[in-house]
Length: 219
Ligand code: ADP
Ligand code: MG
Ligand code: ZN
Image 1 (cartoon, helix red, strand yellow):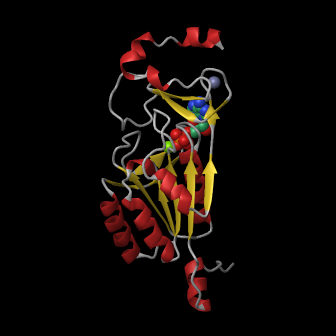
Image 2 (cartoon, helix red, strand yellow):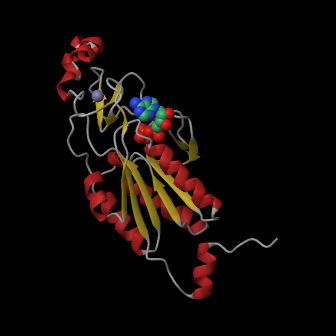
Image 3 (cartoon, helix red, strand yellow):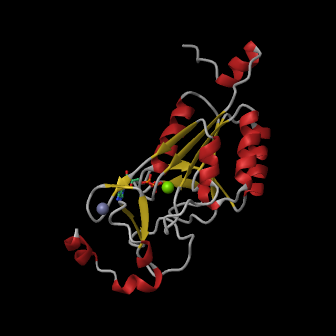
């Protein structure tokens, strides 16, 4: 049986280009952002679209050469230290073979110049799927993500399950006294919390006093 043509081949035949598309997948830690990003990119691969995936090199969980979800799904990815490095790595890939879908995980750790690069790529007809935290552990909008949400074609805001009460969780609670903002995905250091159970002041110095059973009784 003859294989169907790829979108790039079809465009070449028909002399058209795609308008491009920006998709943002956001929500707290454990909400399934990486899972959803991996799902979308795997479906793109099934559709014979060429995919490239990137992540910042702060995420040392499980793999340096793949993105990973808490449910152990993985997809090959290139680890880059900055937006500039991402751009260079992308154009290197693009030279070997045109890329149609670009995935970026943990996008909150890139600086504001990611908005400009995303705009540049979408104008070339690319589909860019960005996954990242919408809020910090203090409950504030997180870096570049709000700006990406504003310019996106589609925003998916996922919730996790509150580890105190089981309600839908929109916050990431930091449990440990570790001051590093960029610790990613370390189990027991962060957990998902709903609005009611989220206590941003309880991280850092106060963490020794944190007793979850007491919190649960108060509810
Ligand atoms: P994210 O990238 O948003 O941090 P992942 O895609 O890595 O999320 O992980 C999502 C998976 O994490 C879920 O499918 C589930 O198996 C697991 N998980 C662990 N804790 C929770 C929680 N509190 N709420 C929802 N899912 C959780
Ligand atoms: Mg993730
Ligand atoms: Zn709760």
